[in-house]
Length: 66
Image (cartoon, rainbow, N blue to C red; front, side, top):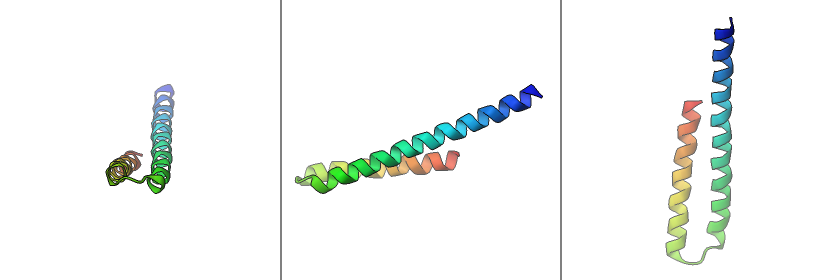
C-alpha cells in the first residue's frame, strides 16, 4: 500500500513542479512583452521576440509533460 501511495505522491509532486515551471515561464513571457513595448532599437526587439518564442516553446513542452 505504501508503494502505491508513494507513487501517487511522486506523480502529484511531478505535476506540481511542471505547473510551477509553466507559470514561471508565462510570467517571463509577460515581462518580456512589456519590455518589448518600451524597447526602441530593432536589434533589442528582435532579441526579446526570440526569447518570447523560446519561452512559449518551453510552456508547450511542460504542458505536454503534465
